[in-house]
Amino acid sequence: MTEVLPILYSFRRCPYAMRGRMALDVAEIALEHREILLKDKPAEMLHASPKGTVPVVVLPDGTVLEESLDVMAWALDQNDPEHWRVAAHKAETDALIAANDGEFKHHLDRYKYATRYEGAVSHEHRHEASNHLNALEARLSQTPQLFGDKPTLADIAIFPFIRQFANTDRDWFDTQPWPGVQRWLSGHLASERFVRVMKKHALFASAQGRGA
Ligand SMILES: N[C@@H](CCC(=O)N[C@@H](CS)C(=O)NCC(=O)O)C(=O)O
Image (cartoon, rainbow, N blue to C red; front, side, top):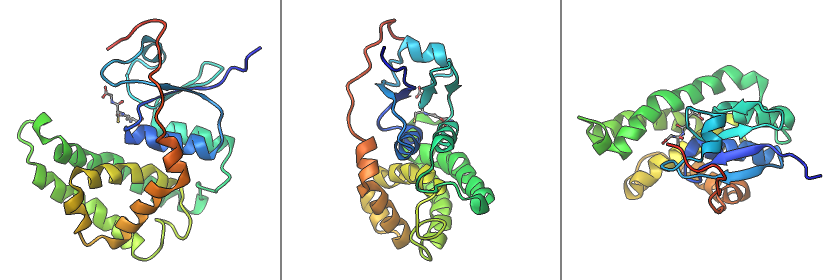
């Protein structure tokens, strides 16, 4: 009999999916990877999670994890060999991630995709988003990672979004006074784990067709 594995629905370039894949990788979770296109989601995924965002993990018992932070938490509950979760930093970690996923992401979207948002002026949103970069720099000018020498949950949950911010205008980003963030980001992008989770997968061939 074939072993029933958790199923991951993922989209390679999605920062939420990246943080989920990083945690699933560090926890060494064996899974079935189903690569999707956001513009052509498979019916199987929408059946499991009608809200239609990635990442989604469907566990063998039918439990559905449909928030990236829940995917990370579940993976680290199984196995946290690099001690990404540090109880002493939980409150600060949660606050940094909330700032990232809330205000920073709001401005990142309007900086990167200004034409999709009526009245959005790209450089104004870049300016607002820079508050978050300044806060990260305050930490990363002192320590290699956000909470000391080793990466923790906050680093892994946040760097995929800073990657997206940096890539929006790489020349501009590289000239900003954020040497700590620039070093930290380069380190994460070059890490074996990140390279592994960015490996290309063939598109999932849905047996049930496509949804929205
Ligand atoms: N709060 C969700 C957000 C996930 C999310 O918004 N993912 C984007 C891709 S980066 C998505 O799936 N968007 C749906 C779409 O574009 O149709 C999480 O943390 O998992």
